[in-house]
Length: 157
Image 1 (cartoon, helix red, strand yellow):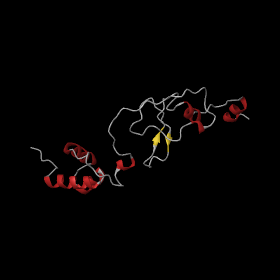
Image 2 (cartoon, one colour; image 1 turned 120 degrees about the vertical axis):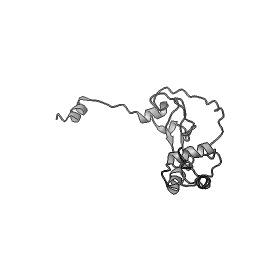
Image 3 (spheres, one colour; image 1 turned 60 degrees about the vertical axis):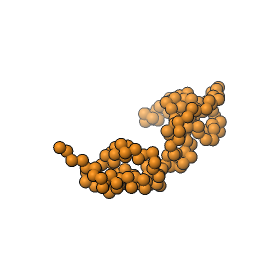
Image 4 (cartoon, helix red, strand yellow; image 1 turned 90 degrees about the vertical axis):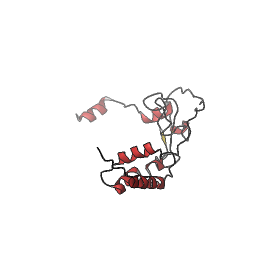
């Protein structure tokens, strides 16, 4: 018969530390005795503790926006662009998507510092690569290859 590492005392300490906002790695270090971060996360999930947690500043999820209910996204009017934008001023000032809500075919152009609570992504439909037309015009610059530039590149002066 295998003896579980999760004694009643450890489970009680796990609940207390988790609800205080400690990270799974911190809890694993404090519980010691071959308890890993993954074991802590698994136990938290099985106990159903992840829903009622107070997020501390040191917690890994504190950098993300708080969890929201999943709801239908409002329809967004899509502008058609005739060509690449000459300046990034034609792009919106704030994104429509977050790291958790951005989908496969939505622009991933970042707005702000990822550590800030109001960090967002563009979220408009992708036109080229991972970006919409205006952001692709900024991100993907064509390389002008002239005979002189190729000679310089090959150092054939």
